[in-house]
Image 1 (cartoon, one colour):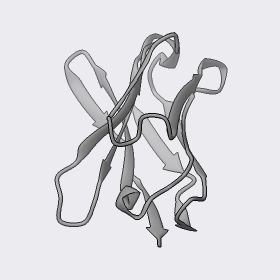
Image 2 (image 1 turned 120 degrees about the horizontal axis):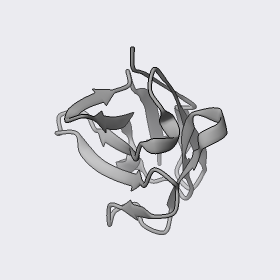
Image 3 (image 1 turned 135 degrees about the vertical axis):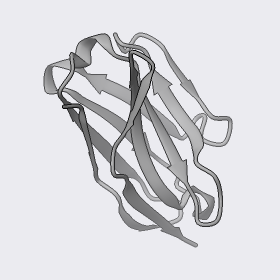
Length: 116
């Protein structure tokens, strides 16, 4: 079955960096686009970044553009989110996501807390 397992979250100070990982299994990872989303306390889940199946194209939410980088290592079945210059408003649970034959799969999430 499809599994997405996030890791790498933590508590940091504003301006610091974190790298999130999402290890995938149960599907052909190299053929799938992948995305990162986040949910802050009391808010709806929102788009952060996405990457095509090959890793050749990416897109980002305006709020993270220039600070976050999504990448995909097909041989390791892993998608990453490098987060630099973190801000308190980046605090939330970060989820990776993929959609296979119209069904959307989510990981369990990893908590990121940024203090000022």
